[in-house]
Image 1 (tube, rainbow, N blue to C red):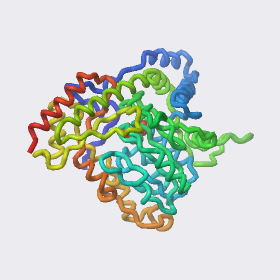
Image 2: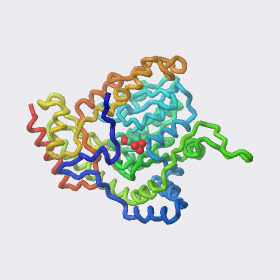
Image 3: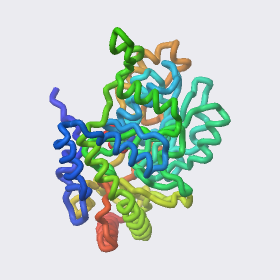
Image 4: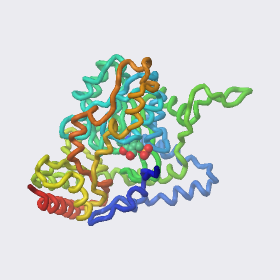
Length: 413
Ligand SMILES: Cc1ncc(COP(=O)(O)O)c(C=O)c1O
């Protein structure tokens, strides 16, 4: 059967057109060509990746940054670097991207999806707590759209149960929680610098941590392919490792983009607050609430909820009308519900394929749209639009709200 393969990066945004700014073509840091030229001039000998790692670690305020070819590999390496065993449970946000989960699943850990807190896209300490069992080893918190999970109560809960907390900070780069950056709030974090992400640098990503041993293990497993140099022999592979090094050219682009990012995030923060205010004035439309603890919202994606029964049309029709009226890439967010979207996981659990066989699984697991009912219900009436971007002005926010108002009014019951 012919399938339509999913697309990523710039290719996925080719058809994003409308009356509002689109993320592509991306704004490129002025030093981009200079850094790329250095690589060419050095005959691939320059230490661009190391320079990027040092610069990112300095800007984010963490001791170590290990650059990778994306966040999917970053979180894959972290999953492998942690001392967990097949069948161990990792509590994860249900509304996220596949990249959050590959590492957990590939290491034969069992993802346990904590439901989201009502009215938002993130899990909370309250929704995580009932998921903790004697097999739980870690909590992987995702800051969806750039909204940061309430990390203090999550960390307190984790401490009580002896769990590791780590973050998927892909969508929240340089966002701030109580004055601290997303990605600095747990033991380690993964970032993405994919071309469509807030710090768009083609493919790219990194791990950050303050833990020296974890940083060393991340490099050993993620970049040295689990190989040690043994005298009189050569490379000895003592662990299953990966070849996840960030390419020099990605590092050059990432370094140039890093020089712009903080100003861009400040603009995104200002504009998403204004836009949310304007959208919130439209009856039947509720933008994602921005918690008081979030002092900088590094917004990657805009999303609003439609009040149930307020409109004659379905959520999908509403989104289609928005897209036609000029909101680029307006569409549904249902596919972010991982227990429903990962059909292979459902099958593995149902058929008890390792690690769902018993042991190492300690109980039955079920993944479908009923796994996290709050998240599922929330996404049924949630419309999101493509990568928000730093080019929004006050006029654009006015225009976007005007389009929403028009579509809402023409569908109102
Ligand atoms: C929350 C989240 N996690 C992980 C990823 C994967 O990142 P990458 O594309 O850099 O591998 C993404 C990308 O869409 C994401 O949004």
